[in-house]
Length: 199
Image (tube, rainbow, N blue to C red; front, side):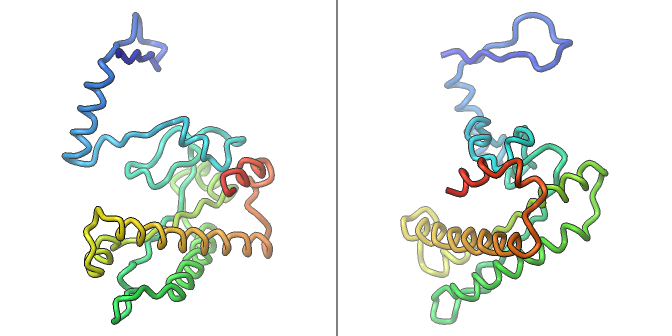
């Protein structure tokens, strides 16, 4: 099947190129396998999960795609080293990890007001929407020290459980902070889509 493109630039003339869709996807997959690029992003799915669509669409991401949000915003990103929560007996310190998630999230929220931004527009939007990005590092090491193959059901279960713990702790902390200082300014105009994504 042919994939028809459209010109984005008004300066372009004539019919936009067409490509063999299967061949194009195969070439993209091969390049991604070789070096990690290009990243493939699905605009409709991304915007279906957008928490603030009433303020504008998500048009792009940063190069690694961990941050997808409104144009001219910045996200305070932090990563928690999972190996710090591996106990001597090999078990994962769930309580310690959740406490770290909460502490990191509070610190990230505080930093939004103390960070410097490259433009006034990015500074303004970062204060209006207060995007925070909390993740983790060393998942591969944690899986390996547990004796699991990276691409195995036990590894996927570990990843899912840890991600769920992080997500739950961050959202609980966010709700508690909103209860004390109020939600971010852009929340009210995006209340329904935000809650739909959360559900």
